[in-house]
Length: 369
Image (cartoon, rainbow, N blue to C red):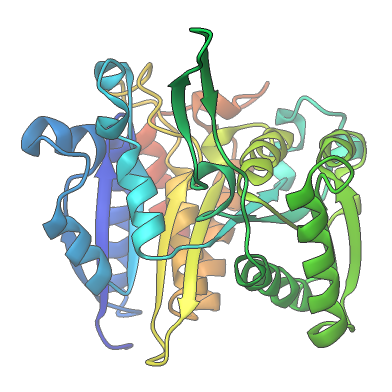
């Protein structure tokens, strides 16, 4: 059995604690099966931390995050905290984790599982077999660039402004992640920007092209403007294998791609830092569905995105590809059996809640193992 791995669990707000409970069942199952054991700790972030401690994330929690081998994150935010100032938003927790741990590469898979082909709003022949990965730069760009702010102009009019800014090293390191992933998949990378109207976009294209020529000439590289990429994702999404793009375009395009699959409740994500000299790599894993406050506490949330985020954790942080695949297969089989949460219901399927879906996945793991 592998040695203990230090895992920090941050359930957060809304449906976060509900779906995280189902992941804990999977972790307990793995421990019982003697596949792996984790040294686990749990803490508050987001609105839960604001209510208890007055800040979205404390220094003590940040220190736990720095010490962890991997972080499993739920979701943060909700209308309860909407009236707070900018620096008190629950979302500051995830932004701070990304920035201070230098989690620069956000991996967002969009996979259409066979049992859910009809759940998409697109025609089955367009999305059947879809398996693409979007790599989003997540610590730079317009979300972090300076100067930024709101000011009053001499004529009394007010102006809000943010700055899109990237350095060579920021672009190269996230592009390198994209190229390396492409090598393990179909060997195709599409770099997305707006080189036609943005200086930063032109610089992005030039930098990715130069890196490709130096280190990754064996990988097929194409370039695409962000607006065209959005159209192509709806028109012919299977043309893509790996997409690498900036923070703001990645934010938009990954949400668009997620709906090709039929439900935000199905999709995981990973955000990776650089590999350190010690071999350690900071990494955070979370579902993309958010805190969903409208259904929190009702026991109807889909836990699969959180469970599949844990599968990504096993694959990218601990190299446990077979165990990750086992969990992914269990989820696919359960969906194929006709059990569905409300977000992926279809004719002829049975509606179940969060805990029943979690139990079904455990039973399927027992069969597969």
